[in-house]
Amino acid sequence: MTTPDTQRPHPGSHILRTALRRNVGAMVWGTVLMGLYQAGETAFPIALGLIVEHMMKGDRNLGSLGLSIAALAVIITTVSLSWRFGMRVLQKANTTEAHRWRVRVASCGLQPVARDVDLKSGEVLTIATEDADQTADIIEVVPLLISSLVAVVIAAVALGLADVRLGLLVIVGTVAILSILSVMSKRIGASTREQQARVARAGAKVADLIIGLRPLHGFGGNHAAFRSYRNVSTEAKHQAITVARVNGVYAGTALALNAVLAAAVTLTAGWLAFEGRITIGELVMAVGLAQFIMEPLKLFSEMPKYVMMARASAERMALVLTAPPVTTPGPQRPAAGGDLEIDCVRFGSLRKLKFQVAAGEFVAIAAYQPRAAADLASILAVSVPPPAYEGVVRVSGQELADLSVEAVREHMLVNPYDGEIFAGTLRTNIDPSGTSRMIPEAVEASMLTDVVALHREGLDYAVRDRGANLSGGQRQRLSLARALAADTDVLVMHNPTTAVDAVTEQLIARNVAKLRRGRTTVVITSSPALLDVADRVLVLDDGVVTAEDTHRNLLATDADYCLAVAR
Image 1: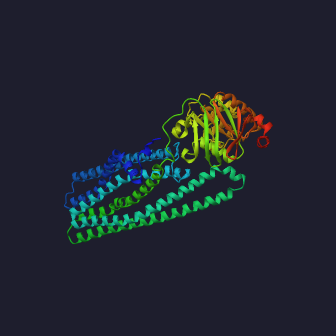
Image 2: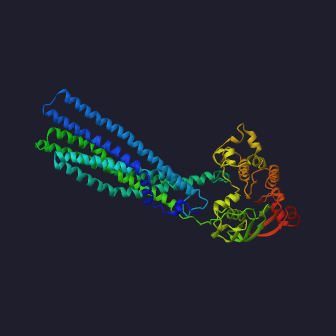
Image 3: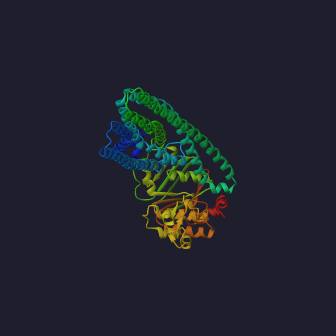
């Protein structure tokens, strides 16, 4: 399988360059508008100084006053509009870019072939949200950095025209401030990376606990699980405090240095005015610029911190985007038909497992060891890559390793015993793609009709996340209905009726056998009802097939089988 992410690596620096490159237009417009904003802010004290200088010369007519007011109005209007539209352009680009990276990370997590990365689903979720947002912040950081530089340059030039020493003081002071803060920003980047990692681990722990909440309550493990999460969350809290402390020191240092520079400019201007080397108007301008320059300097000095945070987030996204797939599937598609062959497969608890299912046959597998059943289901679902086990699995006569994973799953569906139920409706859970024409038949075969009839909304009844408003049996039947509605050539079911009563189980078994007649069906189960409707039963014991016959013949001739499946 070839995907955009596997064609080219995405290290953190490349991710940032990609984000910048595809937002050049928005960043240019944002830089221009924010540059106008900063230029207008800088022009305000300059204009005041010129007005004072003009008034000091004795020219106090109404025309000059009106012209001065008009000039100030133009500056204020420019400042207001340029800020509004500049931030609108940049924030739209920022939000759009964050969305792109969220979709990219999510698509990697949802690919049929797992990535070889040591991250849990909760960590991937954190990367797809917080890290994607912080990476996209680079779209705003660069224009704001340039516009702040414009303000500092204009202020330095204006002060330099009044006296060269004032201009040099601004330039030298700015360079010194940035040099100090750039060193401190590296500490922020390292601390932020560690904080994001610990928050991600806490998120992963929460996801695990939510998935296992019911069984945890069942055997009383919820308190131990809570303590485990509390420990992980405490580590994240301590690291967050460390990051906040570092950020506080950084912000305090930046503010103090900016204040020192502003004070130095003000005192120097006052001394020069006292010496008669600059005029009163130039003094007013210098004092005004000294006060104003603190804002762009503050913004300018914060940029290294945001750059380091964006880089740290980009590097975490690269953990997902650059991770190679666990296996490289073949390009072929299964041929028409539905035969399935397991040829000497050795994996986990399976020991040289060998059997064949003909096209259109209904075969039940009675696995005496649950682990063997789970291992077989994982292999057929392509959750275990072919290189990870010995032997060969053939679908329609073609080896699984030569087939595209997407094509295999379109041709052969494996319905797990713990199928997930999603927030939505009964209909969207049965037919997520909205293309199935067998929803009524699937609902009837899975005996989900009582659930549909129970609610006025019918199939449009709202289902909560993980089926929280459904019983265990209803969730299992809903999962079975989804598998049947897919109407694939080969259907593999793993314990599809363990949570339903015996009467319902009998009806489901008959309905499934009728609905799947002529289509290849494999059910891994110990249910007598499902075993009885199968064309034949394979007994899986100690990783190999030890017996093969109909359910009733095995009951009559095999005492171990009778003991294992009789209820």
